[in-house]
Image 1 (tube, protein in one colour):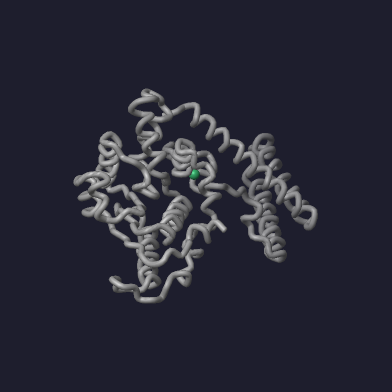
Image 2 (image 1 turned 60 degrees about the horizontal axis):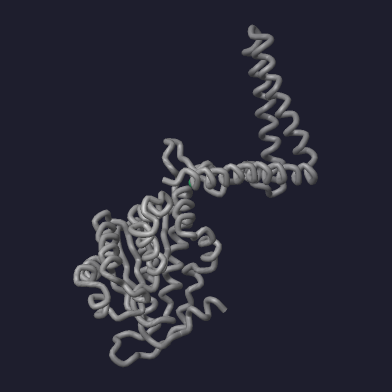
Length: 329
Ligand SMILES: [Zn+2]
């Protein structure tokens, strides 16, 4: 593991916690401006807190009765505050700290000292230079998938219209996300411009949002990584970390398979990744513009049979709806 990287990311968590505190102070200050009574109540509550500590220190023999008295006042103030907030339509959470990640409260670690998924995803994103992925994917969600752009005409050689087919594919991918982690794998195939990349984005976005770790890459950049690890950057901890993540990440998405020119080295490595993930029941999503029959010739029999035996095959067909251009423009 790259210690330097962890340190840098943890500093960012620390900045985030400071920012959470600052945001809370600002929310409180703004409320005090519009609700001076609230400031007064908070001041009284803080004073009672101090009185209680003092009483325990200075008059231990009277502590019980005094404490009861102070606690009763404190309770009265608490309900007064709750009423004041409710009357002004402010939820009590508004005056609590807000976190980017509720699970680890922006520390990166859970109570049992294991890494939170948000920290794991930060490491993956750093290793794969995907740091902006969540922002980039903001609009790429299932709600923006418009079935109406697809043709409703029956096409020669196909049983369904393009729109009917896309409806099924959409349901299958949504089901994949809803039942995750499920050990399932998906191969999306068909010519370009039919929404494959968009759906890969939807899946990545939905699963990252739900706290799963996702690597989303082109075959080209994965091959680069494999070559660095084996040849040009041997022993580089950062490269090794990125490589290990190919096996450990909850979901691996390789978009646009077949655009690369595989050789026997990359084919061997690729098989290893595909196969290890199947054995570990970790999901992989592949998309490709090549024909199903070309997988065997481009790669080999073993990869072909792994994919056809263990992947759900989703066939995209019909006229190019220029989905990718629409998405960008
Ligand atoms: Zn977290």
